[in-house]
Length: 405
Image (tube, rainbow, N blue to C red):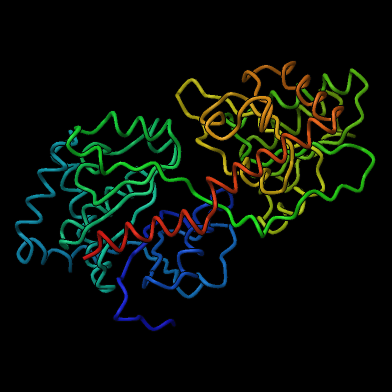
């Protein structure tokens, strides 16, 4: 076990599940934070995911679920931290919770406060604007420790939990795309809006290989969870158009998800079995394998949509990975795509849920190598300037050092 460094600020990173196959941006960011070596980090998670963990993080990760004994032992906070407990109840009441829900959340948060207290944290950073960060906020408040939140997309725009109250009482809130950022800013009083910060995740571009295409059959790549907002249904319909128009291509879709069976069936129905393949059998592939397909591809396609419930990607991490691999990108106007790509300059952006437009854009990129090269280079430069992981993590680290006890 790694021995703690008493001279460094102790920071708990609280993540509901870690590492998640489709949330590599979290693992990547934490690995860089650990590599910098300026904080004493502990990563606490409720559940082990199916993603890969960097060697630098393995000694820092703990998996712990609340036990009955944790709850019982944490009841001491009702006496030793009366004022803090009263503050928590006031905050939870402002969230509009019922009395039973307030006390359930309080006792759960006190249980985690007991667990967190063994780490003697100077700050707790929770991922997602969901119930998990509410529990972390309760625990931090009971302990009298500052907390911060790193929020992302759906957790802000579709199903946030106590967003106003948590954000206003946090040391800071980091949000990785403008759409979610504007949602959060709109939820808090103006006196607290300075705490809400637009901060992008990043990539280590040096770890991505540039295109090294060897096949004479153009390869179209899509990476993402197999779910409604990723729009693969429309991509398959676009592939059918390309097939019927006599375009030579192969298409690979890489990702896990519950729509694997449905999408596989659609491939058969559209008679695309010889040209389109979903890798991973519905379970996806680890990033170390997925990343090999970027340099082998001719174009990356992101067919995402905004669902009726309002769910959409922020700046999809796969767009950054494609840009880092100097791949030309065709994407829809869903989520925050246009925050990263400029149509006709660094990518081709088409209307969502429009297979014909997707097919036409893919044809253009496949047929015009000079245009494709310009798109790829511009996207790479954008990723390098705004999404450099060293720069972005240094900024996050500075915030943590400023706000920690």
